[in-house]
Image: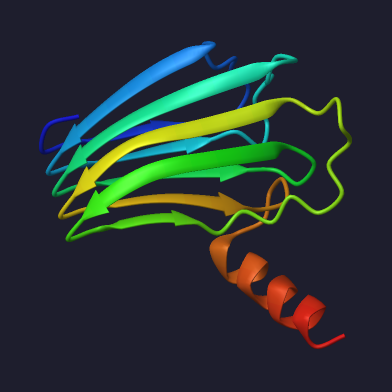
Length: 124
């Protein structure tokens, strides 16, 4: 992605290894309806002055290991009670003056609805 936008959502199958390079643009990968294969699916991110967002459903394990320089590498994923044999989403990479974010949302849930749900769950 170079000064553009890429979005992937709906029913799709992510590759075992996806390399994302984002320069002054943004990319969003929505895995809530995707067919995530058993085992490990790796997203390697290289972001410069851009943003990459991964939206994952509850029940997936996410392992995040990234580096940010004057940016943000944010793993806000809450896996809850993922079974030990759940597929693993591994996110690695580098962010320079940009952002990489991993978020959990239910299928069909908007960002506002997810925020409200998390607030209600936190108040219990």
